[in-house]
Length: 97
Image 1 (cartoon, rainbow, N blue to C red):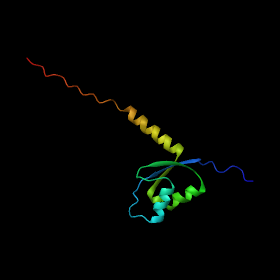
Image 2: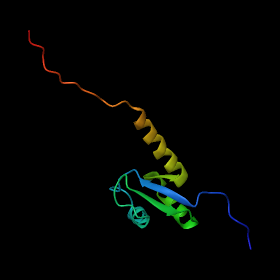
Image 3: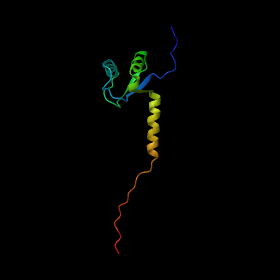
Image 4: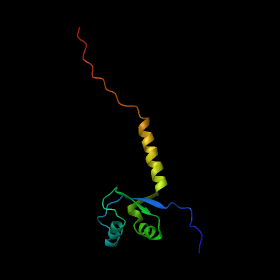
């Protein structure tokens, strides 16, 4: 029996970044089998050889990152938004003399 596999992430975050019109029917079926229906939709799948083969078949339509990379990116974006000061607009009444 073989030892543990490589230290890869066990889950992948897969996002459909290009539309399906104009693509081959087999590619549309592959994207659908991954669970993606709309552009910018994201799904999380196990990192298996079957899933990696499906990703490789339609890699020009997808954006793939590990769950760890995805969580780090989301955290960084949240911190970046938190650093912005709030926008304050004062609508004071004109001073009449």
